[in-house]
Length: 157
Image (cartoon, rainbow, N blue to C red; front, side):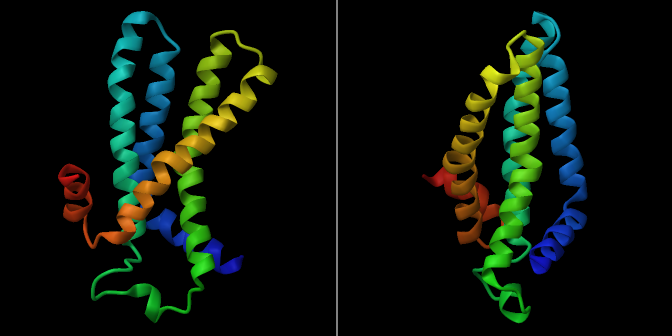
């Protein structure tokens, strides 16, 4: 657990600007969506921007300890693969899933839905986002050596 926490803190220091940008986009989306219909139309443009920023941040996170290529940092460091995997998943949950969860919860609460009614749906949404969107992005970033390959792979498919 100590090694996982060490890797997580290292990643937070390394990606502090990307984290700030993600959190700012999440806050902006939540604030705009809870306002009137005119501002809500602009909020619809912020949502894909958040998705692209999250994909970029995940790629940078995974490429920090790249598996393919000549620079295999994870071989030279005494990191257990379980600690490395746990730290990367903790980062994704903390800085991608949690802001999305909080923004969605805020939008629903402001709209007048009771908290007890929205929690199961929100948790299920976060599980689906993690399994169907974020894990494939993590796998794709693991298989690529750089940002150009990461961006070109979905375009080629």
